[in-house]
Image 1 (cartoon, rainbow, N blue to C red):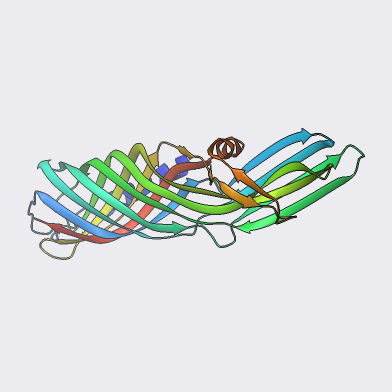
Image 2 (cartoon, rainbow, N blue to C red):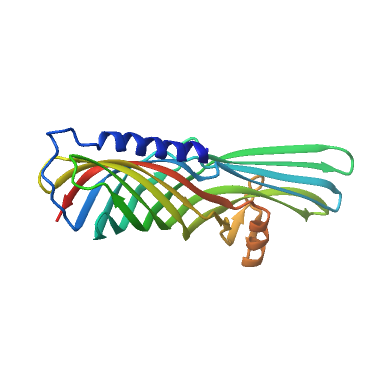
Length: 295
């Protein structure tokens, strides 16, 4: 996948270089501008986070010989667009630096995402039972890549290829809310029983991740100081793991609503430890189109 993305950028650069050659007798009047401001729309595609997380726990108590709890949360993301803005200053002819900020519009979790929970149990007399639940899961991912780049361009042509590369800091926030099941056993009137609760789990955390970016672009001059800019950028930043959190509180039983259990901070933390975190992994290719002003 990575090789394919690099090949796309290289192919774009080769095409742009051919297009940028001035036609004899049609070369535009050569003017040099030291600074550029660019703003445009973007379409990001690639890997953002894993599509599902799971948990599995087994335990026993008294005449309950075996209890197994398992769950799976699916959280695939919808597509979205974004906006981008940059300032470039050319301090050495065709070479310069660039400050760039991208804002990827909120990517909501798809409507068919859910939180599945299954509990299986076996008593010491070999009788068994099972219960399964399917809960809705909602959430969003917010991302803002901030970049500092070195930039190079072949100047003063009607069609000009550009290259840039540098460091990126991926700033963002993950917000997810979903229920999950939790099994327990208790004794009532001398009889051991099994019960399960509907706990509330969530993620509401910001994150930051350093990485790099590389871009190839094509500037098409439409005025003395105005350019239509097309291109593609590849972002790659360090992976981030964000754990689920169980909300402490008083929860009522599902089989018997008269049964309730206080989930304190310590119990909530131990439940969280059984759940895989959400793995954020940013490997994004972003296509863009916008307007550039030279001055």
